[in-house]
Every structure is written in C-alpha cells, then in structure tokens.
Amino acid sequence: MPDAVYLRCIDPACEKTSDLSSTAYACGACGALLDVAYDWDRLPVPGTLRFFAERWAGRHQPLDFSGVWRFREFLPFAAPDEMVTIGEGQTVLQSPDPAALGLALRRGHLHFQYEGLNPSGSFKDNGMAAALTMARRLGRRRVACASTGNTSASLAMFASLTRSADDRPMQGIVFVGAGKIAYGKLSQALDHGALTLQIDGDFDACMKRIREAADRLGLYIVNSINPFRLEGQKAIMYRVLEGLGWEPPDWIVVPGGNLGNTSAFGKAFIELAELGLIQRLPQIAVVNAAGANTLSELVTHRGLSWNRGYWEKAAVQSYYDELSASGRTAHTVATAIEIARPVNLPKALRTLEAMDGVVCEVTDEEILDDKARIGRVGFGCEPASAAALAGLRQLLRRGVIDSSARVACVLTGHALKDSAATVAYHTGETMETMAGRRPTDLPPLANRPIRVADDLDAICAAIDARTEKD
Ligand SMILES: *Cc1c(COP(=O)(O)O)cnc(C)c1O
Ligand SMILES: [Zn+2]
Image (tube, rainbow, N blue to C red; front, side, top):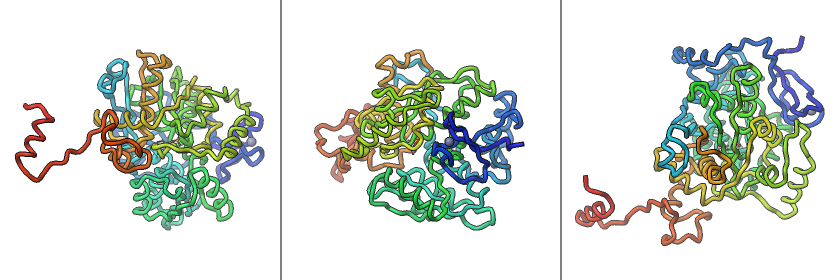
C-alpha cells in the first residue's frame, strides 16, 4: 500500500507521485511543481476546528505553542520528534479601525494578520519551520535559499538554532542580489552566521543559480519551490480562521512576489473544504507592485487562468521572452515582491481558480502612503506588506470588494526590516526611489523631523506650534 503522505505532480495530465525521500522540487516526468499530498482517510484529522482551541491550553509544550505545529494534523509529514520549531507563528488577527485608514469597510470587518511578529520578523518563519523539519528528516545539513531578504533572514535564524539528525549544526547558505536587499534583512543573515553570497544580479538570477548550484553540490533548497515550506505557510490561514472563530472571512488580501503564500493559502482552504471543516472558501486578492506585475499582467490583462490544470504555458513563456528581449527587470521599492518570474505561478493560478481570486497592481507611491497609514494606526510593516492595504483600497474603490465585506490583510513583514524606506519617505532624503522628490513635495503622510537649536525656548515653541495643549 502506498504511503498516506507523498509528493504529487500538480499537472492533472501527469500526477506522477513519489515518496517523501525524494528531494526533487519538480516532477521527474514533466517538470511541473510538486504538492505534498495526503490520503486523509488514513490520517487522524480532528472532526472540528475547535479542537485546536483546546490544544492551546498545552502551550508550555513547544509544538503546541508553535503557530505552525499546533495545526500539525493538517501538515502530517513528520513525526513530532522531528519537528523543528523556534517559536514561530505567535501572531494574532488584529482589528484596526477601517475609518482611521480611510477605508469604507464596517468597523470590525477589517483585520490584519500581523506576521511581522515572527521570530525573524516575517511570515517566512512559518514555512521555514516546515522546510527545516524536512531537511533534518532527510539528513541534510547544507540548507540554501535565494532571497529578496526575508527568506535568508529566516533561514539564517533557523539554521543557527537547529541541529541536524546526527546532531551537528545546520549550515545556512543564502544567495542575495547585490544591492537588492534591505539592510535589516542582510544584517540578520550576517548576524546569524549564514554563508552569504551576494550575486551580481537580481532575484530571478539568484533563483536560477541556486537551482544549478543545488544540483551540483546537493544543497537542500528551502525557497518556496520547496513544497514543504508551503505546508508551513498554510498555518497563516489556520490562524486567520482561529481569529474569526473558525468562520472564513469574505476576502484574504496578500502581496504577491514569488507567490508562495498565494499558493499555500489556496491549498489550505481547498483541503479544509475537502475535509468538510469549512463550508465555503474566502475570495483572494493578490496584489502586485506595478514594477513587478507579472501575475497581474498575465491574469488580468492576458486572461491566463489555471483552467483546471490545463493552463496556457506558451502564453507565460512568450511573456518571459518579451521581458528578456526588452531587457525589462522588476523594479519596486517593495523589494520583497521585486520578482519578475514567480516560481509558484502555476500553483497561484490554481489558488485563484479555487478562491475566485483577483489580481491587482499598485504603485510605489500608493504602497509607501499606505505603509505610513499602517504605521499611524500602530502596526509597523515593510513596504511589500503595505501593498496589501493599497490593493484593498483600490479594490474597494473599484467596487470589486464590497464595503460590507469582512477582509483579512496579511501584513507580511516588520517595519524594522527596511527602515531606510521609512526614513526616506518621511524626510525626502536618500534612496534612489525617492530621488526627484524635493522636501517641498513630500508625500502626504510625511512626518519630517524638525530641526531645532539647542535652546529651551526654541524647543518649547516648536512643541507648542505643532501640538494641542492638554
Ligand atoms: C517573501 C515576502 C513577500 C512575498 O511573498 P510570496 O509568498 O513570495 O508571494 C511579501 N512580503 C514580504 C515581507 C516577504 O518577505
Ligand atoms: Zn508531472
């Protein structure tokens, strides 16, 4: 009898399976992406989602505390003693006031799933817990990723805290595009001791090289092409459901870069529906930056769809050929989504079909303004995360999302990841993306520091001029 947990090609015309000892990231027969697949009938699954609320009482146990592994019945590919955890996923659904953000949603209907509160400061930790578990299970020690920054920060942190199956240190290896990474993220990779290779190219170039290097050297890749990483990221949606009393919202809004989250979220809801644990799927809105808009271009403008798995591969290839021919690469202040060739595109198409999704794109200006608004209501996030709010704003304006909807935006990374972008926005100084903007035409929410002489009268006058007396 085959195993109850296995790998399966996502192409419905192929569906070749392999067992978990395989370390391929693509189908050996057709080259498509792989899913971790489960034969649920042979696995113990709780009959109700409320089961997980009760488990929380046992949170002094690391696996019941983990925001990923406390949902382990939904990603049952490892035994409890194999599961790697560093306390990831302690994030909860927050409910900011939509009016304070200038949104026409009802009070209590807007939610932020604030993933910036993860140990390394981004949602990537959800996936890394699962990917490192698999690396350890397979007896691998050299664990590698290409990264726009947060994957490398997360990998570096997990590798420094994890030991291999034979009790030796794991070794993190990260590829970053030279000059393409926010300092907060680079500093984490360096501080946690990962071997950091700055490749003379962008993310797409790093991604290509790491696959080649992994083939030659036998590195274990933990990018989101690794299907186990996506299993960990499903947990973000379990926590959204938990925050809403297990009732799905109407919309999930998420920034789209390599489309790992988009893929994982769809899989999470498809599986819960198959298990009869939810009655309907939320819709999903995936938000691209205008300067890295591959998904938006292909889906919204060229009509690409999953088409039950028979998607038009030639249309994607011809778009990529156009990009190459014109020398166009991704450019956005939201470096975490600065990706022109998203590796999870097919899985993202599948999610869009299952969740009746839409894709939109927002400008860097819109992203930075909404980042500042998010800061004003008390949630610090990095530019890529703010794309979710900017996208929601646009979709409400266009009437795609109804003002009576219940919406959960995923805030993917912490504000301190990219403090340079924040300071540039508020001061008009430094950063190439802000060039050309004079201090006289600062953006609308700029909060410029005031220069004051070292003089008490001047200091008090400055305070009185800009604040109201109690
Ligand atoms: C990685 C990342 C993204 C992009 O997520 P994908 O799953 O690759 O689409 C968005 N925001 C932040 C902060 C990230 O680190
Ligand atoms: Zn295949």
